[in-house]
Length: 476
Image 1 (cartoon, rainbow, N blue to C red):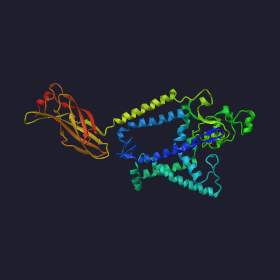
Image 2 (cartoon, rainbow, N blue to C red):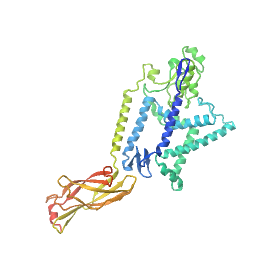
Image 3 (cartoon, one colour):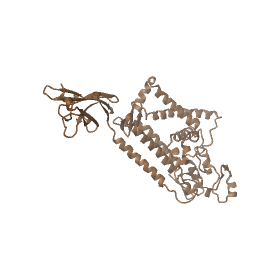
């Protein structure tokens, strides 16, 4: 996929590689919400059902402690990406850029011919022509359909597709969902058709923090003034033609064709140096590579660093301490997220001691029955109703001496609803002999789902209060 021009190999344009990246990102984002394993999604934050799905594992909202790890992964990942490759996220991943390419390059240029060339992004279509007005309306109409699909796709990560379309079928009862689709789609239409790259320049906060993250080894689109010549004096342009440039700088190689300027989607001149509007789309690199390649020369605009191109101190150092630090933090977060996720409990259980400390009753055979009451609050976090029960694990030496009096058999708990059970534990054995105070006996409760004892099981610590001897003697 490359050609030879006067001995200079012109590589596949970065623009084409970006198109591949956009296509992959689009397919993944559209398909991922539809993929389920055992009814669980790869990522779903459902406020409707109060569930979080992550990596095809379902978590209850009480387990949202995982969300900060996801947010830290996202932000630190983007910051690390910026330190390494500048605003490469903006040019290669950001939905804003992807949508603008779809609308401007695909719909307006390729499909409708409203724009004459993809390489000229500075010249807007002549809207005084009636045929162009019709084409613009058609373009907006096509994008409006795509905007609704994009808005729906975004909401599928909060309302799964299987519920989304069912809710829209009865939209009078789901006006918030319907309004969200229309609102997001309307914003996308305004943003992509009318606001355009001004969103990147004036609205997006990312451009304001990038300069804080950059260092001399950060890779970005750079013009080489040592070869091409100095075109600007500060913010003032000095030369408008190659003749003027060569008059002052005879060795300057820049042809002043301004292909790198006309192709820029954010309307900057890369020859002016680093600018916050640059989104590292590398269109200017492609343009200069083509022009200089025809002259048998290397491109004057490259994807490199200040250290290598401007300061010319040597090769760019990619794996420097700052990058290694970001990578270490990301790896640590991944391990922390994996560990926290692996400790997920497939049922939730809270155990509270009853208001009555204990009850004592003398049986006909002369033994004394001691009963402790508890309130079990259990929630089934699976996708289907299941039967639950539990067992008591007393301290060593007391095995089998504390038994379950109530409930006497397993009970059913449906997903998403907290089940309250009054539990009574009893003993007729002499567990302690203390005539001065009650004895606190630590116990462990093992609760489980029948048929899934090895997977859906939790352990909780509690206590069994055994009365002092004087209380036992007064039992009747």
